[in-house]
Image 1 (spheres, rainbow over the protein chains, first blue to last red):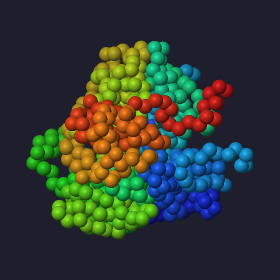
Image 2: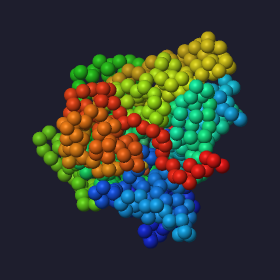
Image 3: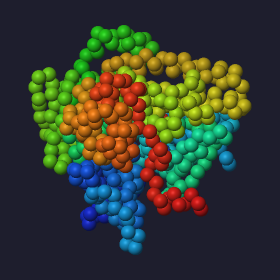
Image 4: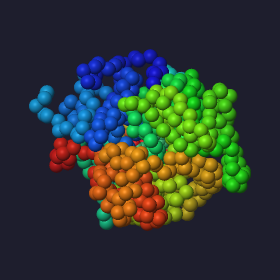
Length: 101
Length: 465
Ligand SMILES: Cc1cc2nc3c(=O)[nH]c(=O)nc-3n(C[C@H](O)[C@@H](O)[C@H](O)COP(=O)(O)OP(=O)(O)OC[C@H]3O[C@@H](n4cnc5c(N)ncnc54)[C@H](O)[C@@H]3O)c2cc1C
Ligand code: FES
C-alpha cells in the first residue's frame, strides 16, 4: 500500500485499538496508520460502511478517530504524540468521558 | 502588535502577499492551520530541505522554487507567523474584520481593517461508485503523504482521472522508484481540433510550461506505464476496502486488481471562509466551481476582505505569487505606505508575467474539463459521504419540488455531517440544477454559518479567559 522513504530515526509509539503503532516524530495520526497498513479508520454512522482518509488536507472528515482525552479528531490534522491512545469511530460521535484518566 | 493586515494561508498567494506588504512597512500577521509554510504546492518545504533525504529532488524543480519564496518571507521582520492556527469564524463589521482562531486547544479572536483570504484550493470531490471504500484516496492526498511524511504508494497503485497534477504525481512517483500499475485517464489522448487555437496561444505565451507538461507525459510513456485514455466510467470495487478497479473504455469494461486507487479531477477554490463571510460568489460553468466575486484589485463584496491565489479562482501557483504581490502593493497604497502611482508602476512587470500565464490556463481548462465520466453520478452513488446520501435521493426530492441545496439539506441530511458540505456541496447543487433544468448559479449553494471548523465547547469556553 504505502512504504516509507528513509530511515525511521525519531520513533514515537501510540496505540490504535490495542495495537502498538510505530510512527515517525511529526507524523499525522493518519500518515502513521497508513504506513502501518491500516486503511480503515471508522464506520459511517448512517450505513456502517467502512471509511478511511480520502483528502488528507482536512476537508472530507473521513479520517475521524477518537483520541483519549481529546475526543473526536481528524487524524490527518492531528500529530502523533508518544503514548497516545486512539480508537476508530463506530457510529455517531461519542462524548468523551472525562473521568477516564 | 496589532496587525494592519491579516493573511490567511501560507501557500504562494499568502506568502507573496505577506512578503510584499512587509517590505512596504505593513505589519502583517499570517495564519495557517499547518505547522509549516508552503500551502498545498510547497508543503513542508523547509522540513524537507532540512532532512537528509532525496525527497526534494524527487518532487522536482517547481517544488524547489517554493523554498526561495518562503525564505524571502522569513527574512522580513514585519511578519508575525501563526502556525497550527485554524480560522473557524469570520465576521465583517464596519470597523474591520474579526476572525475566530483556534490554536493549542484555545479559541481567541483577532481583528484587522484588512484580511486577505489566501486559502487555496481543494481537489474536486467527484463522486463515483465505490469512492467511499478505504484505499480510495485523492492524488493530492497521496502527494500530501509524500511531502509531509515521506510515504509513497506501492507499485500496484492505480491512478485515475485527469489533469496536470496526475501527470506530475506520476513523475514524482517514478523519481522515487515507484511504478504505478496503471493510469486510467478520463481525458482524450490527443488535443481535439477545437482546442488547437488555445494550444497555439498557450505555446506562444508560455512554451516552457507547455513543454514541461509534455515531458511529464513522455516520461510516463517511456517508463512503459500502461495508460488508457478517454475512459468514461470508473468503479472502485471491494468488500470493506478497495480490491479492484473497473473502468469502461469504449464499449468494453475492464477490471484490474488494486490495493490503492488514487483519483484526481482537477482542483476547485476552497471558498469556505468567503461563503461564511457572506461574500457574493459566481458559478464558473466551464470549470464547475464557485469563486468569490472580486473587483479588479481582488476585493470581495465585503469591504476590507480580499482574496488571492487559487481560492479566488484556479490559476496555479505562479499566478498566485504574482497576484499576491500585486494585491499587496495595492493594499500598501491604500494604507498610505506607498503612492498609488508607485504601486501601479512596480506591478507592471508582474502584470505582464501574469498575462502570459492566462492562455495556458485556458488551454488546460479546455483539455481537462471536469470529467464527463464522473459528472452524472449513478443513482446508487453516494454523493454526501458523511451522511451516506445517494444521488437518487437528491434527484427524487428535486422531483418532489425541492428548490435548492438548503432545502435538500433538511430533507436528506446531505451536507449536515462533519464536513459541512465541503465534499457534497457542488455536487448537490449540480444534481438539483440538472434535475430542475436551471443553472447552478440560480440553484445556489449551501449557506454556511460559523464555526466553519469543528470547535469543542471546551475550546469555545477558553474565549472567556
Ligand atoms: C492537495 C493538493 C495538492 C496540490 N499540489 C500541487 C502541486 O504539487 N503542484 C502545483 O502546481 N499545484 C498543486 N496544487 C494546486 C494548488 O492549488 C496550487 O496552485 C497552489 O498551492 C495554490 O496556492 P495558494 O497560495 O492559492 O493556496 P495553497 O497553497 O492551497 O495554500 C492555502 C493555505 O491556506 C491554509 N488554510 C486554508 N483554510 C484555512 C483556515 N480556515 N484556517 C487556517 N489556514 C487555512 C491551508 O492550510 C494552506 O496552507 C495542489 C492542490 C491541492 C488541493
Ligand atoms: S482525510 Fe480528509 S479530513 Fe482527514
